[in-house]
Structure formats: structure tokens, C-alpha cells
Image 1 (cartoon, rainbow, N blue to C red):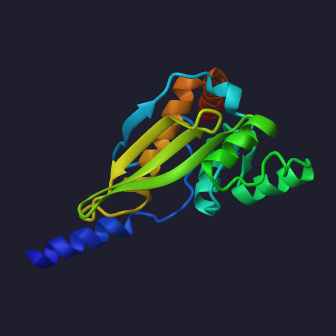
Image 2: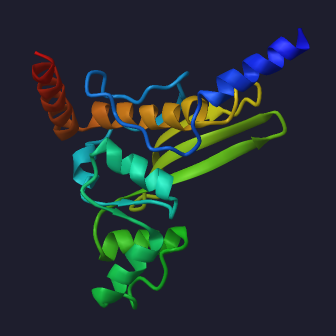
Image 3: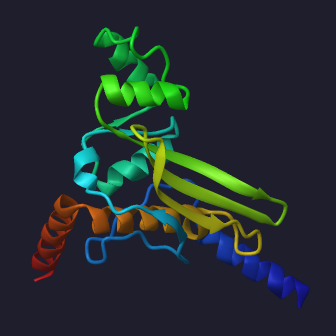
Amino acid sequence: MKKVFIFLMMAISGACTYFEVAEIDPATGYIKANREATIITSKDIELDEFKSLLLISDSEFLKEQVQAIDYFDELMTHADLEKDIIRNNLQEKVPTVRDQIGLNKAYKNYRKFLSFEYDSRGTGTEKYSQFKLVNPGTLEDIFVAEIKLDAMVGINDQYTCYPLFNALIRYIKNHSKSYRDQMAEKKSVAVLGKD
């Protein structure tokens, strides 16, 4: 029996991916995932006001998967933002973008943007991965989704990252008219392509 369980666990984990950018299904508008994330915070804002720039970590996977969502006009890392602040001669007004006060100054003196953060909380068997959208203008979390890390089902894209990205997609859909219109157009193109 133990050998069967080990084989099943290997087969299940073998079908999963790790930090692989997934396509958004045009028919559903989501990534194929094996569970759903829990929404902790979902502020009702007009997200289109912030779509011109998203500050994101230096993780290629996170950056490419957010690009695949195809909502934000521009993605920048902290290093990219620092370079742009220097290019625009704003370093006196924004001496750093590596802390909350610096991000707030960049928001006020450079341009309006949101910050996308990957975080974790908990200890022992109660660990959670989180995705957050933060408004640097108010330092308020406008969106937080989390998923419990479960070693029994595996910590991989299908059980961890993709559910979090789907929660982010759902938040964008619910708070952005331009994204809903864009997704409706993609869906109709996908349907027409099947005919």
C-alpha cells in the first residue's frame, strides 16, 4: 500500500510544473489550476486609474506571468524604477524606492502606480503564500490573496502560483472595465476561430 501511495504522489507531482509561465485560456480567462486561493482583501477601486505601471519583483516568472495577463501597460522592477527616477532627475525628491516611504515619494513625484508583492505568512504547518497589490500613495493593500502551502499536494504552479494568479485576474476583471472589454474581445475571437 505504501508503494502505491508513493507512486501516486510521484505521478501527481510529475504532472505539475514549477515556475512555468502558463497561458490564459481565452475561453475562461483563467489559468488551469487545481484549487482556488482565498481572498483576504479586495478593495473596491477603479483599477484602470493605475494600469499604466506596475512595480514588480525581479522574479522572471512573476514578471512574465503578469505580462501574460495582459493588463498593465508597463512592468518595472525596483532597479528599473530607480533608473527612471535618475533619468527624470528626481533623485532629490525620491532618494530610494526600497522602502515604503521611498515608494510613496515615487508615487507622488514620479507617477501613479501599484506595487505587486509576493509575501508569505505563518510558521510550521500553517504557512501561506500571498499575492498583494499595494497602493504606494496610501500604503494600503488593495488586494491580498493567499493559499495555504500543503506538502501533501505539493508546492507547485497548479496548487500554489496559478490559483494566486487566478485570484489576481478575478480582481482585475471585477475592478477594470477595460480588462473586461479586452477579455470579451479575446473570447469572441477564440470562438470565431473555432468555427
